Length: 430
Ligand SMILES: O=C(O)C1=C[C@@H](OP(=O)(O)O)[C@@H](O)[C@H](O)C1
Ligand SMILES: C=C(OP(=O)(O)O)C(=O)O
Image (cartoon, rainbow, N blue to C red; front, top):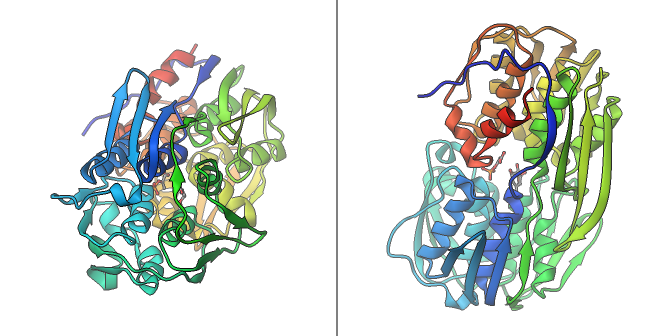
């Protein structure tokens, strides 16, 4: 167990930085490169633990994946080129790896067992295993194939229309990847649009999709054409931490270059603007089919807001640090329609509320979110990430404005998505 002392001497933050590569796009680049025919080069890949788990699993499935200088080179031989692994596939802490990989494995006739860490063992998998079973895959596991370890024997899939009760890109992507290998057409419908990196990247690999307001359809039997380069933009979910830090530490100004601003991910920018933040989006461009820009933010007193409905899937992973932001905004911030937070690496409603209360925040949990009254001063406490990277980072940001010496337990969890997070904070601190 390790600790992080409060940076009590931080008076302001300033500088120009980049953040690590987008986690969602990095996972997909390895997976889609692995099932494509040809060599795919990935630049800006996130060397975080989750994405390294994806590389490890696809190597076990027989794909040659090299790490040369700053690039990841994936030598795909097509989906039929995947081989039965001799060992259990271990996804570590990564929900994206297990759910998307299950979609791929469901079309393959060999036998596999999939496990993850303690957190993965508690996260619901039925949201993908149920539709994948209905397509014809044989999947078993605890609680009717809801919990790991899961055993899979795939093959002979038939297309389905699946209406997902939640807006989840992991569910959508998993079913589309099975649909790629199924007879006929597979359609996924969702209540709000979830992040669309799968659709964008599948199209870049030459797959035809039908995308409508409410969902996506894929015709089975198509193959992916590799041979290209994927330039991964900076992760807006990682940029969220320096963005919020700058917004709440007086006299700060920070520029973050090369951040992905895909509208299905950029809800935090809308919220910051709504709260009155001094935020500039510049140098907008496109990179490997994804919109990218530079973000500049300055400290400014902010107003409370409501975060709900279609905004939620567009900023779901940013809610822990947005809760920290809300403690410093004038008025009552309401976060609702966010029950999905309960099914992440931890129950992020409980972990955020319990730890922020310890630091003196006026915050209460609700069934599908939280209510925060601000502004309130924060005080040092011993807080726990519970092994959840986003919680560890959110509390490191809270520490910047807290009085006294704070300790963050299990801070090393940040390596899941932002390996040099604490160096970044140190570099920006004045
Ligand atoms: O598809 C993805 O890359 C992700 C989708 C989201 O999860 P859900 O699909 O469960 O909403 C998000 O929370 C996760 O960090 C990454
Ligand atoms: C929920 C997250 O990731 P995953 O579902 O891939 O574990 C996250 O990164 O916040």
